[in-house]
Image 1 (cartoon, rainbow, N blue to C red):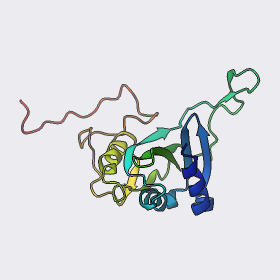
Image 2 (image 1 turned 90 degrees about the vertical axis):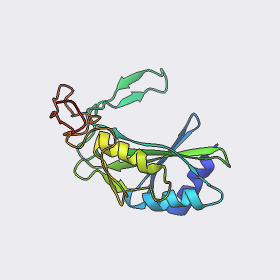
Image 3 (image 1 turned 180 degrees about the vertical axis):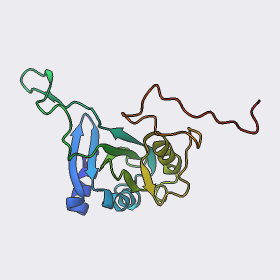
Length: 185
């Protein structure tokens, strides 16, 4: 249904669209990080796109993820020879889903991010609702949002060390105890 969006993105942005897929009604466009803001603005402002509802944004941490290949003949899932991601592949990906209420279509945008620079332009200026969604992703995964109006923790307290949804966060880690003036001594 939303293959119209994929076609428009490929036509308008060319090489900025790294890859596209359309499976079971889910259209995904992997885009280059430096074009994300421009693509998001296009999706919002173009009358044929009219993506006015940002549904979510989140991150994916690929550390330790095994690749699974499905054989076309048997349909069985088997781990591929390259079970771990390549060292040159980015560790993180940002994923956004936006919808158009008018046209009743949706698109998922995906941006790959390297471990040494996990940052993307903030989309809070395009869709105001992205403000809190980006803060949640920053808090849980440590992804930086360049140009965000208020990038600070939203779930964890300020003294919390690390980002709990990263794959390398130790589940038994102890955090510093913090006393607040409104708590009992």
